[in-house]
Length: 147
Image 1 (tube, rainbow, N blue to C red):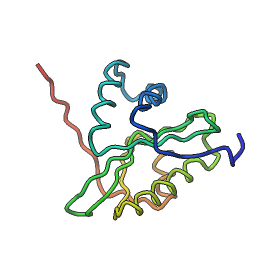
Image 2 (cartoon, rainbow, N blue to C red):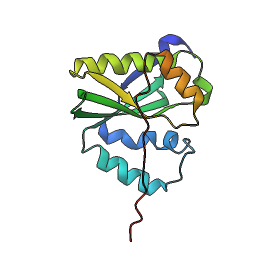
Image 3 (cartoon, one colour):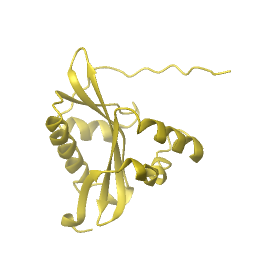
Image 4 (spheres, rainbow, N blue to C red):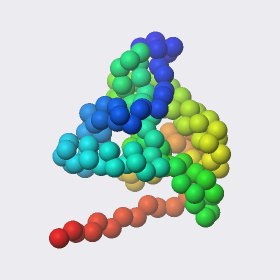
């Protein structure tokens, strides 16, 4: 890996399925590939963009971006499903990603960058604290059983 070979760019919605192999590595849930693709297709029609992190042309990471306006923050972006391939961790790529997202969000007139991190993911917490994020609350979920 050469530092100058690493690049970050928006993934064209027509290429959104390129992130599926990375999403399947998350391990926090199991969702069939067909369902992931269906959901990604729907997401691209909403206020969603997806970044790819590349080593030359090899996709090594991804980060979803949800743009919204919140009453407490105004325009903001929420980073979602941040994934960097294990082999590339510890090389400053996460910092490059946060810097890229922060600059990109500022250009889109966002006031805040937000994200969620699983409560058991302590390395993630430390990393994001070191990038200037603060914990503002808990993210609660309630699964609805569909009949």
